Image (tube, rainbow, N blue to C red; front, side, top):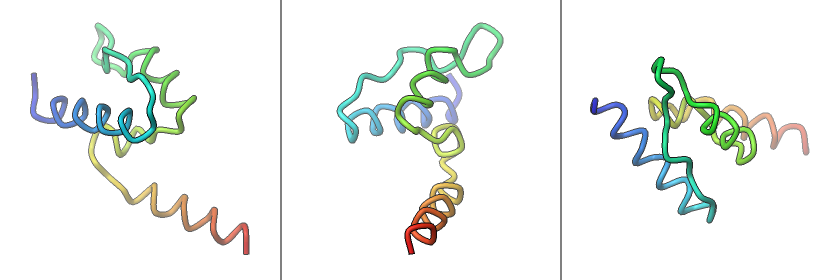
Length: 72
């Protein structure tokens, strides 16, 4: 297993703990794409794929900023 996939699994476990949800077992399908189970979980729980797979928090910060500006 690659380091990147190991780190993504660790972030998924962390997210599931934070949100008291059950994370899917498989991140990738047989073709190496995000599994349908993972995509459904991400939609339902608003989990950002950029953060999950590469640890990029930029999109999270920008979304939070847009959300705060919309409320102002």
